[in-house]
Length: 133
Image 1 (cartoon, one colour):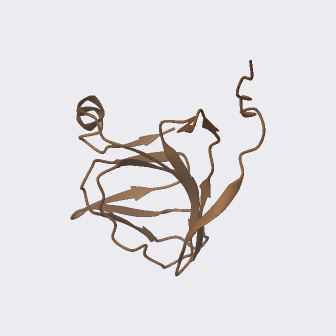
Image 2 (image 1 turned 90 degrees about the horizontal axis):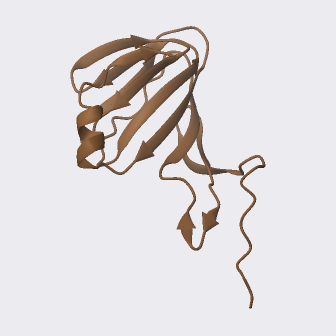
């Protein structure tokens, strides 16, 4: 009897370009599949925003968290502005319009994770507070 080979989940994840923005590429992490299903319940990316630039407005069904690795800026959720810097984590509830402005003098590097909403997850991220890691 043949059994399916389990994917190696211990190595470095491969990265692919998801899209190109005015400031450069948005790179996504490719999680291996197990039995034709994703091995992680979320998707992730790494992206950068150069000094003085704004990201495009974004709005989607998924919930999203941005983790600031370097640089300083302001996250806009609808009309609310929140200053952010290294170590900050910002939550975006489902269907909340959001964007980022790099207000500093060096590029901002961010990591983003997103996942489908559930009743429990939507309640947990409703405030969209910024937290220092």
